[in-house]
Image 1 (cartoon, rainbow, N blue to C red):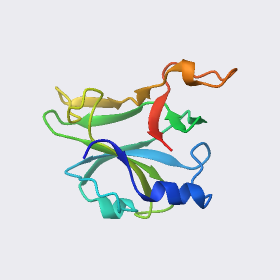
Image 2 (tube, one colour):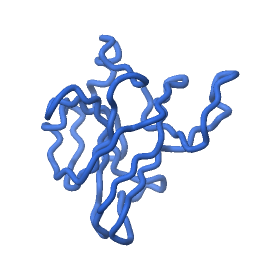
Image 3 (cartoon, rainbow, N blue to C red):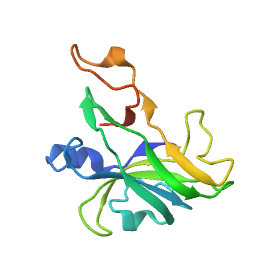
Image 4 (cartoon, helix red, strand yellow):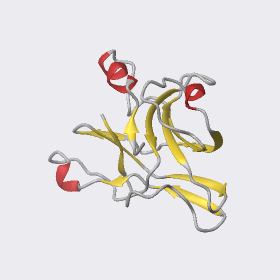
Length: 145
């Protein structure tokens, strides 16, 4: 499955339980994970955890959830990776928000050499920002709400 939101995102938003700018939002790097829109927590997703890190510099512009890149160290070459965005609510109960398994050209997420993987969100077009909103160039779209 290519990059998608989990089904619960619209419910969390409607119930006022998801606040992109102020909640504790992280990106988790996995191998062997697959997408099921009905998954609600990290425990539901499966796969093997490789690492994780906070999504910093978050902003919400129009319906786009923006944030800075996340760095994952010590990744292995020739493995396919998946990234899930989570709203941290407690151990193994983090709400899954989005599943990302393709890079910008539609290929699986991989690295050519062992080392650090930088997951950069999709570039945000500053033309889409409301008047007066300044979006730093390194910030991109992690998901559309």
